[in-house]
Structure formats: structure tokens, C-alpha cells
Image 1 (cartoon, rainbow, N blue to C red):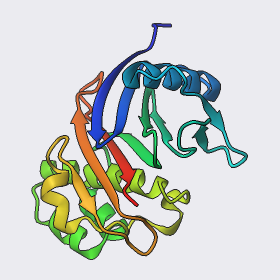
Image 2: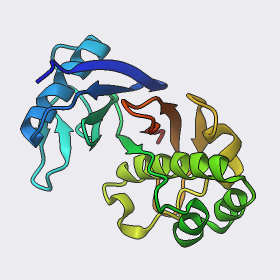
Image 3: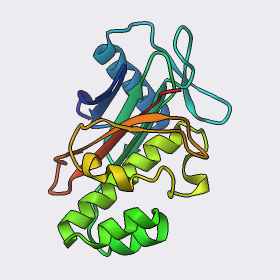
Image 4: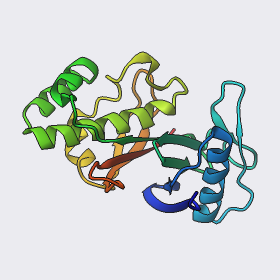
Length: 205
């Protein structure tokens, strides 16, 4: 197997997200690859990832316990880190086969987000849908519940113009299930012709 390589793909304040590829198989190997990549990118040799009883990845002191987040799809691994606060990351690989972004948004997103996506042509609707999807998943991971309560929050309808810009910073006030957060999204070229979407969210409370 090829030696994993990483690239820094997103930053939000003191939080970073690195993309590791190819991601090793198995959770323990992925955790080790993420730890090595984050140590190198953050220049912090005392960064140690472990698993909580809930199976959620966490950091040992002196860092914030929930200052790490991991997400993987196929042979891609996205790892997020912040030294002082909770973070969340998410990665998705675009799949346009039998996927209707307008229907998906109507079923899962806020009314405003669904209306905005329905107004786009198909390529733009697909792009916006995936960007919102990863942004919401990354943000909801900060709460510790993930998408258990649904994807209607955070409502990013008013920030969609920023979410569609690679690396743009989006700041959100506290919601009913989330603290105030900052997040950023980017779209990358995949190893095939399928784009890869990455998001990083950071707790601002």
C-alpha cells in the first residue's frame, strides 16, 4: 500500500483540517495516520488521539478533549484539530447517479435552503447540496449528537453564497442545538472525476 500523504485543506481561526490519502484500512490505522498528519501540520508532537467509551475520537491533555474530529469516505480521511475548543469535520464524495439534490434538500434541509437549491440548474444544485451537507454534518459533530436530530440546523440559507466559495469563513450564532460556530467548506478534485467536498467547523463559545 502507498504511504499516506496529507494536505492542509481548510483553516478556521486556530482550527485546521488535513486530507490524508490514501487512508489506511481499519480504524486504528486511520487514527494513527490522522495523528501523524495533524502533528506534522500543526507542528505539535504532543498531540495524541484516543477513543472515548462512546467511540468518539478525542485528544489527551494539554489539548481540548474534543479538539479532534475524523471523517472518512473510500480511501480518503479528513482530520480536524483545534487546541482549545471542539471541532467537527465531514467529507463526502459526489455521486450524481440516481441522486436528486432538489428532493434531498426538500427532505432534509431547511425550507430556505431547499428553496435556494431548487432555483439552481442541476450542476449548481448538486454542488450546493453537497456543500450544505458536509457543512451541516461538520457543525453537528460539535454537539456530540451528529445528525441524530436531523439536518435542518444549522440553517445556512442566508450564508449559502459564502458556503459556495471554497475556503470562505462562515460565522453562525448559537442555535437550539448548537453553540456559535465558524465553518468553512471546500471542493477538491478526487482521484476520479467525482469531486470531493470537505468541511471544518469550530466552536466559538
